[in-house]
Image (tube, rainbow, N blue to C red; front, side, top):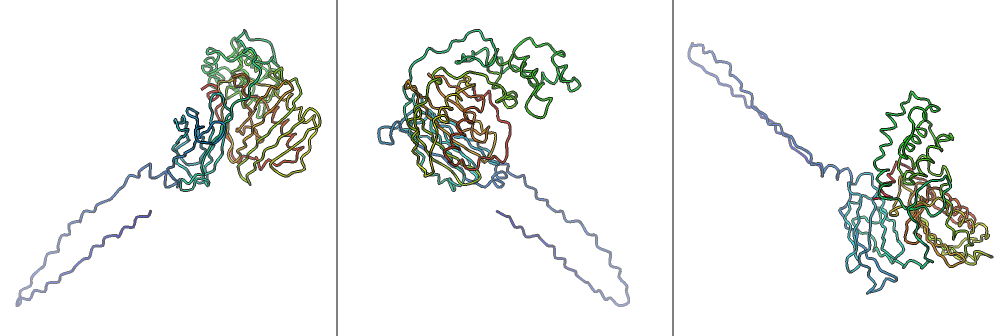
Amino acid sequence: MHEHRVPLQWVGISLSLLVLAGCTHLTTPTPTTTPTPTTTFTSTPDPETAWRRECPGWDCTVHGVVYAGTAAPGNELAGALACLDQHSWCSRTRGGCERTSPDGTFDIEVYIHDTDSLSIGVDAEGYESAHLNLGGFDCLYCACPPIEFVLQPLPLTPVRPPPTSATRGGTFPLDWPVAPLTPEEILSVRDCDIENAHEKRYPDSIAEEDLLKAYEPQTHCDWAILAFAYAVRGKGPPTSPAAYQAFTHAVVGNPGFALETLLFYRYFDAVSMVRPPAFAQQEITGVRIDYRWRGLGDPVGYSVEIGQADAEPVVTSTVTYPLAIDAATVQALAGALTDLLPVSTSFLLRPCRDNYPQWSVDLAFADNTQMVISTGSNVMRFGGPWFTDIDGQVYVQVSSAFGQALGALIESLGLPLGQPAGMYCRIDTVFDKAFP
């Protein structure tokens, strides 16, 4: 809104006095002018009003309901955790999380600009997770579409003994399962001040070949700092054997360092860390793939089911394409279940904008073991890192192995991916999301 002010003008009035008095000459004194004080009006902009002018949008309440099994009265699911992740160039809100009420509903308040991206995820114990992606244009004037989540119970799997916290050691690749991090190991990663210690121990004046001699590592944190020093010496991923040796010492001793943010982006996909689970040595008998993509381009969405995957695969899909696949391409998914590290929870990792893939892949094995591996992250343009829950333990894959195998399958089927190319990327924190 523009404010118009009408300036004040002073109108001067001249008075001329003519005095005639015989022959008498009168001298009229020059009048003294007294300056008229002026008032200066200043205003202090309201910060709240200012940012809203630059970011026109709406204060909205995103409302949704969560059901168990089917979307029917009486199936409303209470206590589910609904989280809204907002990506915006100007809004000061970033979303939030809320437990569903007894009637299965949730309400999350956000300020929405029409270019925003909203990702809503719902988790509940004993149920598969569900996700929904929306754009600001979907919620113009707060008119978001009806949001319903129907969570399906987790499939029953054979119970295996949980991994125990044993003395760590060895070398890559580690045997699966890797024991969950202890509270002491989590604290050790958090307390390791990699960036500042690196600057003090390894100034730029020290050549790369002299880094190990400059400070002798004693702890896993020391090895992590050295691995970071090697990584920042080059402009790309570290390539020297000494760099991988330092990284190996740190992660084999404390796997949490693989998820330390400064190391995660530099050593991701650098080495094979963990062997596949034992059940992945069997043949896959069935696959279901659900894919949704949104970003700069036309949205994409479809579901694919592959039966008889261990013989002559039979493919059905919600889209019409010349769908055909060979068994070897399907079976490659099992061998790609490598590099699974235990974390406290699954999380979204979206350092890039304008590329929002959402994958969920169900795998069935010969002994009736079923697993779901999914991602809504975009560290890799195709999607990733990937998460799965095995026997109640959440794992994150710290490589692109499964994404590459799935990409080969999707390419063989001739299915579209959309245009997964983020316009802008930044560093997004990792460890604090994995261990909140």
